[in-house]
Image (tube, rainbow, N blue to C red; front, top):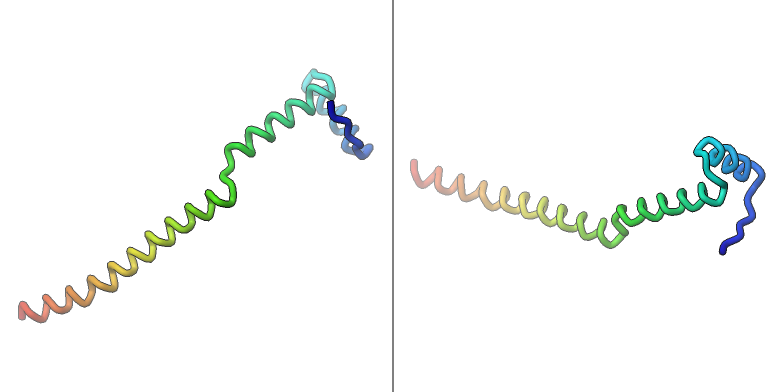
Length: 82
C-alpha cells in the first residue's frame, strides 16, 4: 500500500478524471502508473540511445572515409586512362 500527499489541484484533477473514466481514484491512479510503466519500458535507456548514436556516427564516418579514399583513386585511374 502506498500513501501520497497531493496538492489540492492534483487531487481535484484526479477526482474529475476518475469520475469521467468511471473508476475510483485508486483505480485511476493504478491505471496511470501502469501506463507510465509500459511507456518507460518502450523508451530506450541512455545506454541504448548512445549505442545507436555511435553506430550511426561510425557509419557516417565510414561513408566519409570511403568518399575520401575513392576520389583519389578515381582521379588516378582517370589520369592513367588518358
